[in-house]
Image (cartoon, rainbow, N blue to C red; front, top):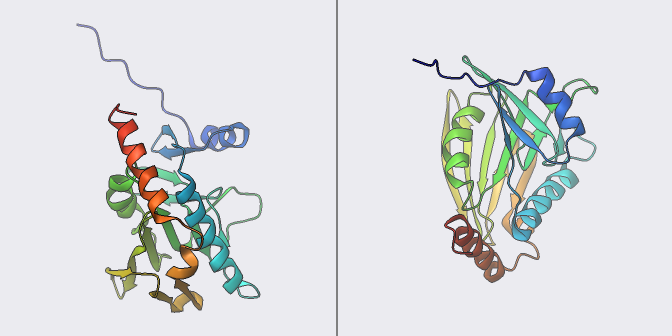
Amino acid sequence: MTAAKQPNLISIDDYLAGELRSQLKHEYLGGYVHAMAGATNSHNLVATNLTGHLYSQLRGKPCAAYNSDTKVRIKLPTHTRFCYPDCMVVCEPSSAGLTYHDKPVLLAEVHSISTRRIDFAEKSDAYLTLPSLQYYLLIEPAEARVVIHRREADCFVAEVYEGLDAVVPLPQIECELSLAALYERVDFTAAQREEAQLWAEMRGEG
């Protein structure tokens, strides 16, 4: 009987070095490396609005907002993960020579048809283990809707904010998130078409 071939796991050092050279972004899961899929225009607009909205409120304050080019490291009991959230806020930054942060206060994902299950399940489970985390935001790109997991004592409580008049309070970082600002210039009809097209392509119908 032939023994099953074991996969060649990538070390953390090799992964981090490779990301500096790569034109594509990859996420790291306990030795396995996964290329990140591209995003729709609506997704990118919402993510940019989010980072810019928080950045402007954090100027002159101890915390800072980072865009999706910055990794977060999550050290779990069985393995280490590196992810690229769409936005993060950090009040205790890692040293300047590193390419990731360990202690985000806020993490946000603008999800889509292709990432919804991962964002709501796998990433949520990993992100919510971070002792520093106060807020995890799951943001719809094609409708004005934000689900926030807010730390309350020793657990996280989920809240839903809907509509362009809604405002999400973020007192731990002295900010608030206006959904009108978050979805500025977003054409929801076009965003829904983009999501439908992405779904069709995933099913081999595009």
